[in-house]
Length: 182
Ligand code: G3D
Ligand code: MG
Image (cartoon, rainbow, N blue to C red; front, side):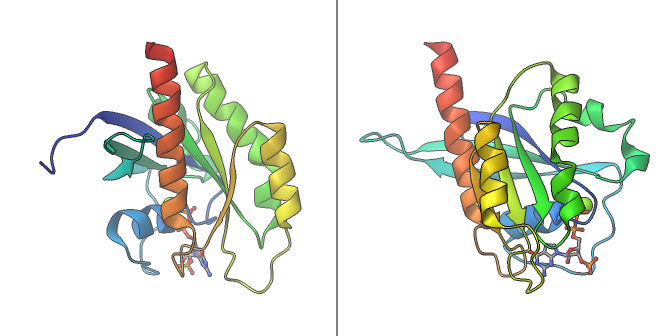
């Protein structure tokens, strides 16, 4: 049955304005890349299932409610409200703009302040299709290692790596949930 699922998780997508949060969510949930959408107003969410394989057992259906949170500072007051109740996060930066990498720590602080606990987060280096890359993979990996999170690269434009982000987070969320239940 397509409407049934084993787990439902709210996840939030974080990062500076224009790093590609909306593009990643759109690419994943609708399978296309749009260049004409408006700057995200406040927040919006998409819902999509991923199939998670537990070795030897039947796949689990995990429903992800993906909150695309507006990165602009004028929405800062609203964001904690959107973070509440989230089980996981996707922290995005743009490999062509170093500033978006430098402020990653601030995004993590804002999230943890709002939810008061550690949750699985994936670090995503987006826009790898562009030729003017300035943040190297080694730098992204180092930040991710230091914070105990996986590091993935994506291009919302070509679609490369996008599904992996949600698949990987889905797996981490199931592991975390099943550890806390038993
Ligand atoms: P945001 O939701 O994080 O604010 P958006 O970012 O998803 O709105 O994307 C900001 C701009 O970056 C958009 O360009 C979008 O098309 C572009 N973009 C997003 N992801 C990628 C990517 O992987 N590769 C490339 N080349 N561009 C990307 P515009 O020009 O529409 O503002
Ligand atoms: Mg957006």
